[in-house]
Amino acid sequence: MSSLDARELEAFLALAEELHFGRAGERLYLSQSRISQLLRSLESRIGARLVERTSRRVRLTPLGEQFLAGLRPAFDSIVKTIDEARDKAQGVGGLLRIGFQGTANDQVVNAIALFQSRYPECATEVVEIPFSDPFGPVHRREVDTAVVLMPVQDGELVLGQVFSKQPQSLAVSTRHPFAKRTALDAEDLAACSLIGVHGAAPEYWRRARAPAATPGGLPIPTGPSVSTLQEGLALVQAGRGAMLLCHPTADYYGRRAVTFVPLTGLQDSFLALVWHRNHETARTRAFSQALAAVAVAG
Image (cartoon, rainbow, N blue to C red; front, top):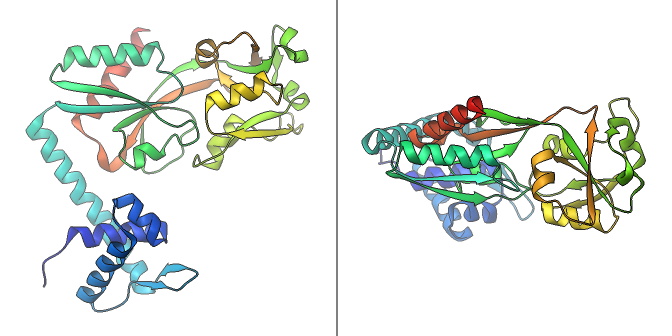
């Protein structure tokens, strides 16, 4: 059997997921022509076509589907084995990139301090990840682990420590009638437009930020969509709609033209630490343990 080429396999896996040569190339930082070249080489090695491509669409052949089903778990297992061996050789060292949305709250900051005191040989880097794409940076390996708003319904992600249970707040303009209220019920949301999130975030996650109906079934008007918290708060300030936020985020982003009113009747807000199932390392496990220790102590 001819020798395997890992780059050919990576190109096929990226193309099988994206079904687009350009996007597959972007994922691997390769040109579209290079992806095509790698695919042709793999198909020549196998002796049959794995992908059907026309001017309008790209799809896997039946053999390509079968090859993908067998290759994906085997390839992921190899990557995981290499990562685990490297971790054991290096210990908890190197660099840990921690993503966060909006702001790193006190528990995250304290967990980073505890982690650094336990593992001074491991550097940490804190990276703000897009509000509209909470899981993408983890999938693309731009960060090693990330603190994200719940819910998390992704089979490729490990759900680590869940923490920071907080009631939700409704951000409204100081000119909004709700701004004079000391508290709101979820059914009150039927009387305001909720600002949503657009971008790569999955539908279930975006719906949690801007539900379509109250718990009692009343429809909630749909407001404009944004990709960042700052954009959303600017629209709130302009009276274009209201925005559901967890209490720590409301405190951090407080501004004079926006009022944050406590809201009852919806599930409390939670944060969670997540990382990719196939990219787990000794560093991510150690940081999760540090976060758990801080959460218990707090």
